[in-house]
Length: 172
Length: 394
Figure (cartoon, each protein chain N blue to C red):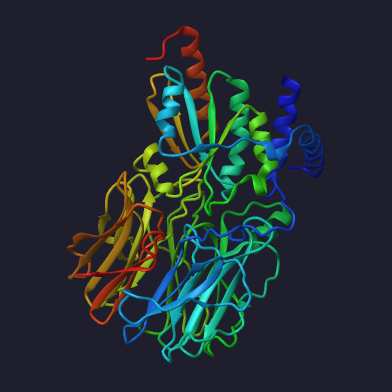
């Protein structure tokens, strides 16, 4: 990013931070029961589950993609779940970032189990916690897993397909 | 509310371009928040079979010693005179190694105030762990950037080697506006039992920045290093290099060829052990097109041989050690309810293996470590519910 763009972004961020109290950012707890609860809450509908960490640079670089997809495909909820390596609350160091995510319409949560492997296993028995990690659920909740940064073109086409299904009523 | 969305997106871009969005002022990152102690811990065993372990306790780094193979441990002794935070989670944990004269060496990563920064700290005891020297930072680069994931070894001549992942080259590239993958791997060596360290040497650029480094002293006085690398254009396979007896690192060679193309933080580094015939045995994690999971194999120039898959679909964070032709490997694996400590041994240098389960725990745990003493293997595993657990491998 150019210095001007960064300065402009920083100004906007400052204005934005005044408008939202970053300490009030909700981070829903996410434990081993949450994947099933999400499938129930989104029964018959597509959604995306993404795990990330502020400690992971590819994760941070991917965040604007989720905000962009969320804005352009409002029919598909995107859950961003933070995994803290050392158990710390990400709001301490990244409150502004998290507030921005929430304001972009992304649902923010954090892994709340002190045995993170319990959560990994509940999401996907093969997942060892590498980040970023995303599971794309279609309306029948068939899922596609993407470990590492998601290919933006692929994610775009997946979202388009879900939007088409919603329009035509054919999700199966 | 499209205007607000645009504002939010711009703020998001600005924030994501920064360190992580929140510059939280002067508070310490990582370990400096309250009583939670990460379970990252390390142990070493001396010639007499005494165990020395380092872990976090009440926010402080402490040394523990056991003369009965881990059944009981003595009272914690502080490694540092004043409290200081130390990373002890995931692939980052304090390290301990013993010198031939009974020296006790400890390294750890101390987080600095900016997020995901740190410096490599070192302390030594010359009286078997009764008292420790004042802790010092081993590298001369004093920028408040990432110097993390310390690795520690003592070579066959008693020289102390400390390696770590270093972000100075990334920072320099950022200032120039050029891209730089991963972090650099640096090391220092002490020839005087940790009193002083020589100049730091860069072993490699583009190491994977979040995975532990494996060090293994070799019988010839060299030290082998194995780490997850980022090969162009983004292949996170492993690389190997040797620190010569002259104290200079040799060339970087590719060690594994799984072609795992991923832009991610696996937080999952390898381990390395010496084979009787002069070769090296490794254990590593990959999700390349050819194989997915934890694997062990003998490292050959063309790639690993005698490759064997370790554990089940959630096996993770394996470690290994060797005694003669005997190899022992341990790993942790969550089975849906408990985390299990698995072990496998080979009496024929990795041709055939037998598996067994050593322990399990319901609560959180660190990463297991395999120790060799005489003809025997022990697994050290620090867990919340059974701290400093030591299991012999039958």
